[in-house]
Length: 212
Image (tube, rainbow, N blue to C red; front, side, top):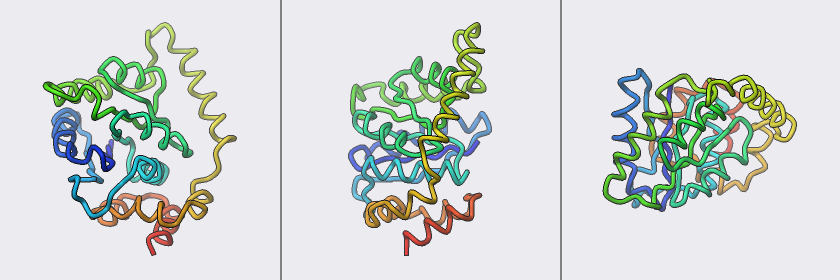
């Protein structure tokens, strides 16, 4: 699994801590972490939580990434922005229990963590525990297990609803504010990381047009 890490501007200073915790947990599982930044609070490209949603949607829908780890100060803005787009099911995760139940019940492909709330002594350990529970088992198996059948049914229903209530991403991208969208792809390593992993030529072309 290819796991993308995205940080917005208010919590960019924690990018190194988050990346270290994520890699420590998932690399021994055979997963790969791709860090899209922001890398520091002083990065030239300043991502807002709205732009996180755009970037996450492009990565997931193009299959450049299989999962997105993101967040903001409270995690709420990043979650809402991610869920504004097709092909993204993002959960708000504060604890290892949140991580496990979201993975097993909701079977999503992104989480938004509140990187400012309660992130004091032991914050890095909490991240490790969250990532451990998020990826410890194949997702979507249900919790408790006796609830697996109705939970899988509800997830399938949600997926079907989203195909009706959301348009194709390649129709959405050209209609976004040009500067807002361009800023989502302005990270110093975006082009290097995205285009080699992107598996959808239509999305790649739409992104290239926005980037100019």
